[in-house]
Length: 339
Figure (cartoon, rainbow, N blue to C red):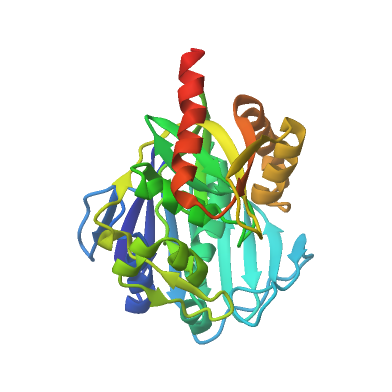
C-alpha cells in the first residue's frame, strides 16, 4: 500500500491505494503543494486523522439494498462521474456513481472511507472531484466545510472568487497570482468557523485553465500544459510546480466574496455591491450536500457567518485584466483605513 498525506485545516488526511495508476493520479494533482507527503509501504512518518482508501476495479459492488435517500441527475456531457445515488446505513453512507464509483463513507467524526472506482474515472479526470466528495462528510463532522471557489491571499487577508464554470473566477484568480497574490486554492476551498471569523485554509487541488484564459494571460504559454482527458470540458492542466512566479498563501480570515462576470464587450472593470441575502443564496448553491441532513444546520450557520462577516461584490471583467488586482487590493486597503 502507498499513502499520500495532504494537510486540510488542522488535519492530516491519508489517501491510500494499492494501484499505481490511482496513486499516480493523486500525485499529479497534489504533489508540489505545501504540506503534501508521499509514503510507501512500511513507512510511518505521519499519523492520519482521516483516511480514504480507493481501489481500481473492473466492476463495482452491487448497489446496497434499501431506499435511495438522494439522487442527483446525470451531469451534462458523456464523461465524468455522472449520476449520484446515496444510500444511508447504520453509521455511514454509500455513494454510488453507476459504472464509475462505489464508496462507503462513515458519518462519524473518525473512521475510514473505502471504495472502488473503474478505469473511466481516471481516464476522464474525475478522481479529484470524487476524492473531495468522499472526504466532505467526514470533514464536516470535524468542523470543516468545502466551498467551490478560487481563494487568493493578500497581506494575510483572503478573497474568495465564486461562480459557475466559465464565469471568470479562475481567470480573475490567475491575474491576482501574477500580481503577487498568494494561491490558497483553485476551485475547492476548505472553510472553518474560528474566533476571528470564517477562515479559508490552503486546499491542494489541480489548476486547469481554458484556451480563452491562456489567450488572456500570455505568461501561461510558458508553462507546459496538458489537455485534460475530459474532452467535454476543453481544459488544460497547468502544473503548479512549473510556475516560477507562483507564491503560496496561508490560512486567513475571508474578507471579501467576489462573483466575477466576463463582459461581452470591452470596457472598464467594475465592482458593484452584492446584497448579503443574495450572497448567502449563492453560497448555498455552491456548497451544500442536500443528502447530509444532520450537518445542514451547522453548514448553514457557517455560510451565514461567511455572508455576514464578509463584503460581497459583483465584478464585471471588461477585458483589461492587469487592472483587476489593483481594484481588489483597494478593497483591502480601504478596510485597513477603517480599522
